[in-house]
Amino acid sequence: MIEFENVSFRYEKEKPVLDDVSFRISPGSKTGLIGANGAGKSTILKLLCGLEQGSGKITVGGLPVIPENLSAVRRQLGFVMQNSDQQMFMPTVYEDMLFAPLNYGVSREEADRRIDDVLARLNITELKYRHNHRLSGGEKRMAAIAVILANHPEVILMDEPTSALDPANRRMMIRTIRELPQTCLITSHDLDMILDTCETVILLHAGKVRAAGSAETILKDRQLLEECHLELPLSLAGKN
Ligand SMILES: Nc1ncnc2c1ncn2[C@@H]1O[C@H](COP(=O)(O)OP(=O)(O)O)[C@@H](O)[C@H]1O
Ligand SMILES: [Mg+2]
Image 1: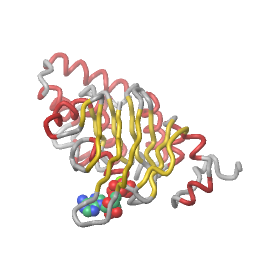
Image 2 (image 1 turned 90 degrees about the vertical axis):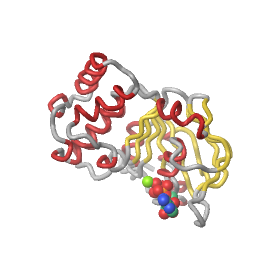
Image 3 (image 1 turned 180 degrees about the vertical axis):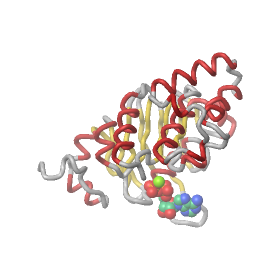
Image 4 (image 1 turned 60 degrees about the vertical axis):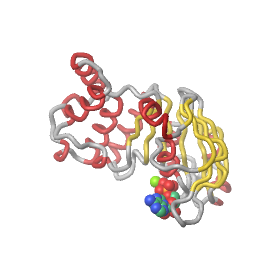
């Protein structure tokens, strides 16, 4: 579903962020993209949507991520950004959810059906007509996911979905992610959340993929995590 082949990238004149990175994500799977601050997690998501361009080959659903394909690639992707304020730009949740489907030529009736269905599935129907700027942090994050889901993406990218959420909202977010049927690529340094939601993990360190594979295996490898400046998930600390 997603493939990186020998991808290297640097921001202008800076040192390389990604150095010959390759990985593959299969359809329907949930993958955690982990690594210390600055490891390049958000950069990988930006490269996937074509917001930045590096060398090597990136494909989404078989389509190379190149300028000619960007609109087709982006149609498949739903990007839940770290800061929901950058993503919600209409006055209300409902208007934000309506915007992309109408833009893609979905009828108003069908869009309304999708919206009610997504809100019910996320259990946030009461947020429908609320003003975006009056939502709490947790509500805004859930609304941002609703906006993305209303567009029926095949792949969902989430950048630090639990950052700055209180424990109750964090639990709700974990439940929501677990129930998503789509292929998901989730960046986080909340390794407990990754363990709870993802079967596969890609660990970035020093510009390289340091490990990729079973979330349980990688997330309980204390030595490996410490080499990459990460700590064992709390739920596994003390068990080995
Ligand atoms: N727009 C930018 N211009 C220059 N450097 C950047 C930019 N965005 C990120 N970086 C740098 O690139 C590296 C990787 O950043 P990022 O992908 O955001 O890391 P992560 O999401 O893993 O914390 C960091 O060293 C960061 O400072
Ligand atoms: Mg980041």
